[in-house]
Length: 204
Ligand code: SF4
Image (cartoon, rainbow, N blue to C red; front, top):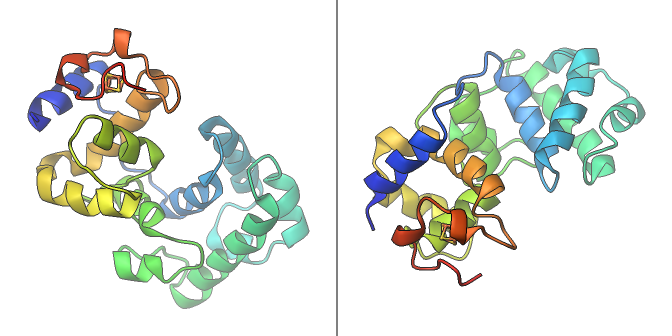
C-alpha cells in the first residue's frame, strides 16, 4: 500500500483548504452539533447559533429552549442543546473562556470523544492530529491502509502508518473524497482516481 501515492493523488484532486480556524470554540461546538448530521445542516445551524451567541460566556447564559430553536435542524438537537450549553459553561468558568488545547482536557468535556477532540486540535489549533470520522474510517479500510473495526482503532493505527506530515490533511482529503467518490453505499469505483490501488474496488 503506497500511502504517499494515495495522498499525493488526493492532494491533486483536493488542494489544501484552510486548516486553522481563528476560533477553536466554534470548531468545538460545530463538531458536537455535527454528530449524526449532514455537513450542510450543521453549517446552517452553527451559523444561526453563533450569530446570536458568539462566545462561550454568551452561550453559557443562553436559554436551552432558545438553543434548541436555533439548532433544531440537527440530529438529536434536544440532547445537544443542553450539552453545548454545559460545554460553554465549563469553558467560560473553568478555562477563562478559552478552549483547552490538549487531548486529555478536551476529552473531559461532556460529549467530547476523540473525533471531536482531534477536530478541535486540527481545525481549531492547527496541530498535527488525526480526526477520524466515518469517512476516514470507511475509506482507510477500503483502501487497505488499515484493517480496523472502530474509528478510534483507525486513529491509533493511522498514527502508526501515516507520516506525521499528513496527519492534519487526511481528514479533509478523505471527507471530500468520501462525499464525491468513495461514498458509503454506492462508491463510484468506475470514476475513482485510486481504483488501481484499491483492494476493494467494485466490491461494494
Ligand atoms: S475503488 Fe471504489 S472502494 Fe476503492 S477507494 Fe475508489 S471508490 Fe472507494
